[in-house]
Length: 479
Image (cartoon, rainbow, N blue to C red):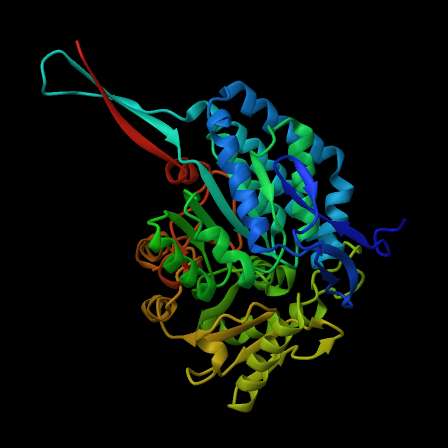
């Protein structure tokens, strides 16, 4: 049956078994392109979540003793299975969350890399020998898995986040209880099937679908959860941080952003403009690291606005399986309302709509705003849509100051040929990530990915997750 018309029924994956919700309830998952019914997913209850955590806890004592070669083999086998199911995963990314084909292919390749990179972690769960002042005492540290890792993943890059967080946790010997976004459960269900086929023991990876507002606290606040990894909004992240604090549960939070790009007068616009478009319009701006603020030195400002508007007007909004299509549908009616409000509020208060602002069904045209002032919502608040503001600056120093004028601190970028200014910016920007002569949208499996301030707590990535998802124990032997 065609992937566009088949209505799928999705179950939880708990303790190595596919099960319905405790009370038999289900919820609709909609295709964001036209809000048609895509799937019906098990609607998790508090009891379902407790069962998932219990399964992960029960599996942990045995799973933590698995050999590095076993976890390595299972992860590499999962990557092989992913490659064999590439078309199914890409279809899911297109039809469940509205990814254009190029974005879906990009995400698949990134997800594959995440799993393979995690396999390399298995042999690096290590401590060190430590000099001791006590005569005849052998001192060392050993690194051990924490236990049950709870992960909550977003809709926008569900395969990247699922593969990174789940694979890294499993690689170092933890077990996992996973709550995916209610807008992307099928993708995670597919990955659960891949994990099971790869040979991971029952209970090592568990998935419960449902609404975070109803059962999220049952996961993050569970006394048997030893670590929480969350990607999502700043508001929800703050709540999770407070919930975790009650049990002193460590966590990493990858939250929202208002990422700036500074363009200095010596920048090459032929290089800059295509990368600028990529940095905000990929997946219709539904990316926390999207560049929603551009600060351009005046000698280039008018020409940049002109060229950027021309590119924005030509960006593809056709069939999602057409390689020329870039703009995705906005995921939900609630988020569409938010994007519309940000644009209308800015224009109503005097901003100039240089490009876009109109809608084609559930898709917003690439939108450029100038004349944005601080009383406009779009100035300081994350839009999470294909909307960006362009501001003139008179100097590098002004650009740095304005780039730092935010509560967020996720990604950032600067375009210049001046190496001194480039590195000064990198050292002084209050963001967790900085890209020189590159777009704000960039990620790799092994980098410390994350932000400061309202953009989150901690970092993700193989090395960062090794530190976060294990703990050191000091051991001495008196000889």
